[in-house]
Amino acid sequence: MDLSIDRNYKKVMNEIDSYCNLFNRKRESVKLIVVTKSQPSEKIEQAIAAGARFLGENYPEETIEKKNELSNLPEDLEWHMIGHLQSRKSQLVINEFTMMQSLDSVKLAKRLDRQLKASNKKLPVLLQFNVGGEDSKYGWNASEENNWSSFIDEMVEVMNCSNLIVQGLMTMPPFTIIEAESRTYFRRLRDLGEYLQSRFPELSISEYSMGTSHDFKMAIAEGATMIRIGTAIMGSREK
Ligand SMILES: *Cc1c(COP(=O)(O)O)cnc(C)c1O
Image 1 (cartoon, rainbow, N blue to C red):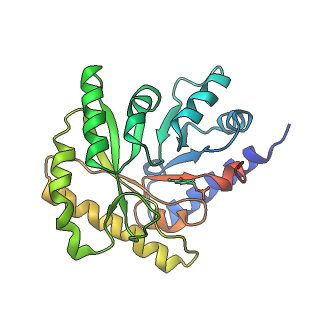
Image 2 (tube, rainbow, N blue to C red; image 1 turned 90 degrees about the vertical axis):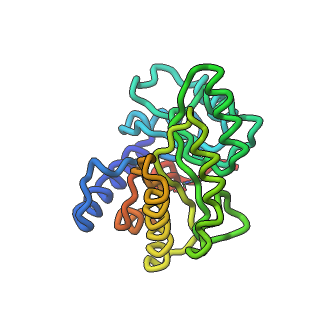
């Protein structure tokens, strides 16, 4: 049996431990989401055997296919949707996922809310923001701090969706290996969270999903509560 996923998982867990020490973070305040998009179910099985309990997926149909191939899943296993979702697939997320991390439009929020009400369910969500303002990234554009008030009206509409439980923010910043740059983007998401918390005191913004294989150290430094690690644990992706 190939042990590389087990080894990678332990290595990343050790790194999380040491960064939590370094930046005075409580270890239990940082959750590891193992990103399994475009990975076959055999490798997902190995990740679960290594200890993974939070899995991040980007394409709901692919997730359903893989779930059908997996058996004896641990009771406490959670599936988190982290990719851009076309609204017409919203019901799949309600049926298959524990959390929707990539809520990026009012349209999607309203559709999810309507379907949740119909089935008498609630769904924890994170609001996705585009902290670098890149065209290729999803989420509300939060690259200019003095423009943040421009999406307040849309935030109100999302918060009126009473079957969505807004728990925090998520971002996918521009790629950089320069730590100071990563840090600026992650800090921006934190600042935005504090801004929204002050505008909407009834909210409880406590989750920050940020940091991937190459930049999770700085994400932990800036307060990430969920880091989303794919290749560093699962190896390179198919397709
Ligand atoms: C693929 C993906 C990740 C994981 O990236 P790695 O570089 O493989 O760690 C994290 N977040 C999102 C939203 C992704 O699409």
